[in-house]
Image (cartoon, rainbow, N blue to C red; front, side, top):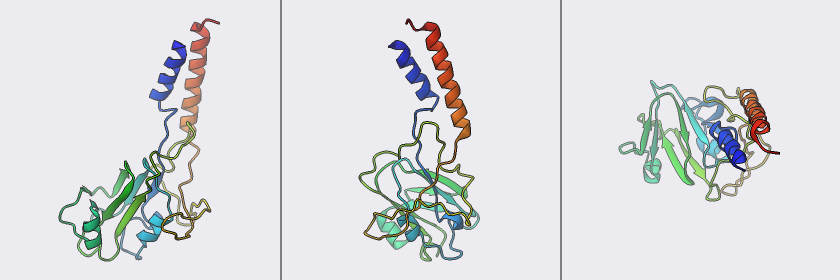
Length: 198
C-alpha cells in the first residue's frame, strides 16, 4: 500500500496525472488588433472557455496592450483604473474563476473601435476540461494553427441562445510527455517488482 501511495506521489509530482487547460489565441489568426476589424464578441461566443484555460493575447506591443477591467470600465472603454495591465505583446492569462473577464486595449480609440473582449466562464465550469494524462496543452503560446487551417469541433455554442459554430483547440500529440510518462511508469513498475512483497 505504501508503494502505491509513493507511486501516485511520484506520478503527480512529475506532472503525468495533472490536467491542463486549453489555450485560446484571442482573435485566432487575426490576434489582438484593430486592423481588419476583428469581431471579438463573435470570437468569444464561438469558444467554450473553462476555468484553467489560458487566453493568449498576441499583438504588436508598440501599438497595443491589454487591460483587464471591470464591467463598467469595459462598457465605457475606461482605461483609468485597470485590474491588471499586460504589455509584452504575447500575454498568456490563465482563467482562475467563473464569470465574466473583461479585457480592452488601453491605447486611445482602440477599445471604442472594438478592441475589447468579454471572456465568459459559465458557473458550471469549476475545473479545466479533463485531458489524457499524457496530453500537452492545446497549443504552446508560440504556436497556433494557421489561418488556412481552422480548428473546429463542429458543435454549436450554448451561450446566450446563439447557435454559432463552436471552435475549440485541438490537443497535439504531446510526444515528449508520452515518452516521459511511459518512462516513469516503467521505472515505477521495476521499483515495485524489486521491493514489493508478493
